[in-house]
Length: 321
Ligand SMILES: [Zn+2]
Image (cartoon, rainbow, N blue to C red; front, side, top):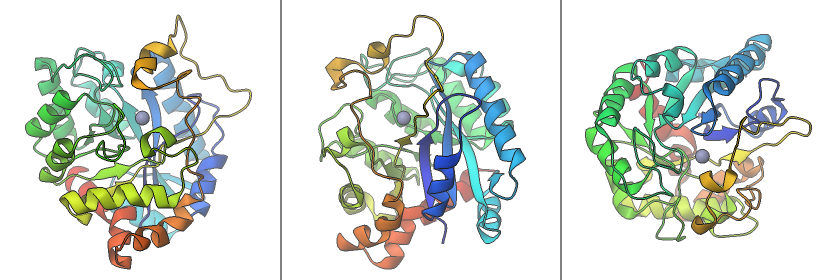
């Protein structure tokens, strides 16, 4: 039974320590999607991070394996190795070139979204004026479908996400998003967005971030409560887990170079205070408690297993080629 963590953040630095990733593995995770950049990160930073992370993975074949298919993940799990893919949060590092999608795929990027909180030339972000998918964005969706990369709508604006899900010919996921019906926050997604993702065959992966879960010290039961809401709305086969734990490391500064303004990317008006430093995360060990917490909401053991990974394996089988 594969446990799939749809989004985790190491420091965006080539020398980031993978110890937290080892802890995820020890907590039962078989596949983790690691962020390699957001719209605020220049290409120089994104590329150095990909280079560094690939080198770390290659140096430890006994612990990590870059996965390109669902079969890779199952083989890695059988070998006791953690399967890893990368994700890109925003289209800006693609320099307005749809051809860059396949290049990122070849470097290990398995899922991407088009906007990080703010609007860009491809799509609208969730903390900006409403803006849909641009003509360039439509070409980008086609490129993502063609490349066999997972289209992800977390951090994307409502209208843009609905237009992406309408344009995509493959399942579209939310890798780390929670229901707005439970917690009023701009990062959370409406029932309409959840239904639209499910209609593509996609999965909504619930995050473990305090502000989006609506609790100060989130735990497995909070995550399970949000997962149960999505399951009730669109069916348990459309629910996943993307705890979005952000690991900081003393001595490694991953602030984007130049005049970086955190309050632009995480605006106070959207409920962020001092960027995301006030957010707290569920502990890594939440993974050990999830199966029981999901079953406390009334799910069967088999349904909990779908939420913890089975559903994302199904989507990966369909999308990754
Ligand atoms: Zn994110």
